Image (cartoon, rainbow over all chains, first blue to last red; front, side, top):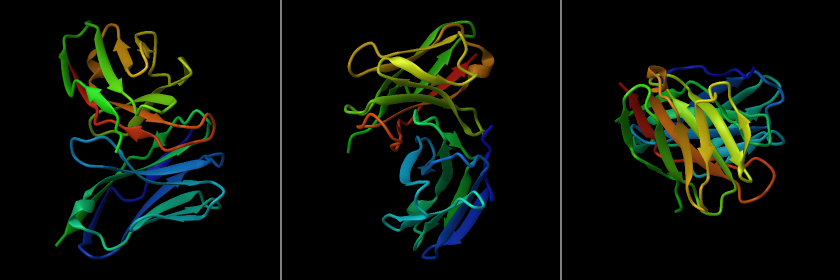
Amino acid sequence: GESVGLHLPTLSVQEGDNSIINCAYSNSASDYFIWYKQESGKGPQFIIDIRSNMDKRQGQRVTVLLNKTVKHLSLQIAATQPGDSAVYFCAVTTDSWGKLQFGAGTQVVVTP
Amino acid sequence: EPEVTQTPSHQVTQMGQEVILRCVPISNHLYFYWYRQILGQKVEFLVSFYNNEISEKSEIFDDQFSVERPDGSNFTLKIRSTKLEDSAMYFCASSGIRDRGNQPQHFGDGTRLSIL
């Protein structure tokens, strides 16, 4: 079955610095990848997605990189702000019905 | 911005009782999902629903679980006879304005289900 894992459970970053959150997946048939942000007491909030035919996608202050060779996904947050403090999940799917398999989550803590 | 809404935010139920969790997905979406998150664990897929039928379900989604879209706006998850291990946060999600291809799933803020 799919194994989706995150390399670091907690990431502490200084305000204004860039953050990088990593995710590994095991199923080479995975074809759609999403990053979610979850704040306390809230549901997962969509940040950015990428399909397997792409290596990189940029949004507002966020960039997702996909390396299919090593089955690795990363989320880069530029100029991290206190409002970026949250748990970040990667999620992957291999089927067209969209069943998502989530990683364990990385807690990002932004310090002043 | 359109959002997925879930009610109630917290449900406390005695073991063995039936519970219905309610969701209003984003109005023009075609795909609907339920996930759950046991405290301290990963978000887990339960079921997906498309064109008024279940398209996929996990091994967690046994005969005690059912889903329904009784009208054009609501999407419900029913647990017939709750067990202690059903205690979790249950998330509804919806996606898809197109019939094919993966599209971002948007989640509600969840219902915390506590079984006593």
